[in-house]
Image (tube, rainbow, N blue to C red; front, side):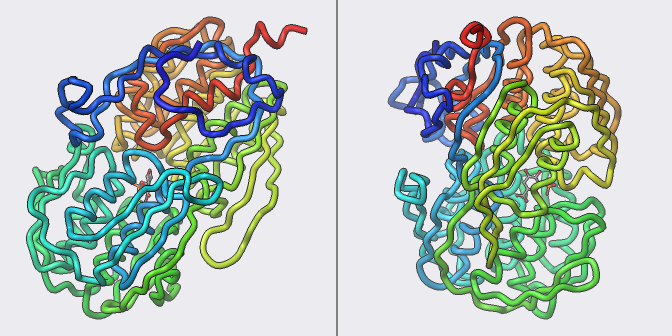
Length: 493
Ligand code: S3P
């Protein structure tokens, strides 16, 4: 049984046509939508209006997953469209804005900088997705905030916004929750300081104090490939004199480079990177955010893991810098079909059908990591279904919302998995089915969802603690899970 759900499931349609078949796949204790009205103490690390109570979820083993899922809007793209819209002149409309707490943090910070933001208005956009309108203040037009800016759990908010703030002639402080305050920031402090801003942290960590200044363009190659660092430098470059170039030793997601021209900016490709002229104006745009492939990856992987599965993920972003996971699922044996692909200006998008077809062993090396960084936890979950996964060169995982190597290994082991941790990776030996058990999501949304996918293949039910972390990127995740799963009892002919 699913109890205490906060709202109806996003319209996932079980292919079997029997919604009742899937109702007992998991059970939630009463999810307390909190806030002051609910009379619960405020979580110390969150803004009072998005306080969440701790919750755990019990996931029952499943025979297979089947259905169609309209996936929520892409988180990375939503952040960028909102930020660029705020720096543009005129009113932009963003259709399909990502619904999670991370992208809400970006909007909250923009409001605190004097930007008029309306929405997200639920169910207004394409396929019922939320719509946001932003009245931009122009490049360099933010107003000084009255207090510290709170990026919540969102590294993308903190790092990208810091780039934009570096070019504003006021001092701002940007911070976040406990998880964000332990994440390394030297990677943006260094290039933004070289451009002329004065940026200081608590050592290498937030809160960051940014004394914005007249900036000068630089030619920069981040020591560790990172889309957040690249984007922060480009956003600072927009406010700088001269040209700013960012080069990469390995390609990372290019949503900022694709978004800038949609707001009228000119960019040039250069050897191993991209160059932007400072001082360009941005003009407002009407944009549609595709579904988030990193969220869709949980359903795609569940379908790849469980024999007899057949899942279609509707209108998902298919940017080649993000589709690594689909190639890895195919390598493992899954049958992946792209349907209704739309190419053109901006982001490629389409629907994806995934069916189980085997679970071969996979070896992920350093060169593969940037294209798969957010999907490594769910690929580890796939391996627990009888495959095997060896990952090296993924030390960056230790600097995500949790130490994603240790917390992933701990959680999968707690479910009965055989996982060895190394300094920059891990090995999952998936031979026997998981036993089932109790795993802690450690406040990390992608771990909560990866553990749920692993738990589907266990012999016994599993409990995932701190499962409310899914709200960071995928509110309603467990409702969709319930609607897609066919239990083992139900599958008996
Ligand atoms: C993101 C970039 C990646 C990714 C994160 C989102 C972005 O981080 O892991 O979830 O939107 O730019 P890094 O830039 O630290 O690799």
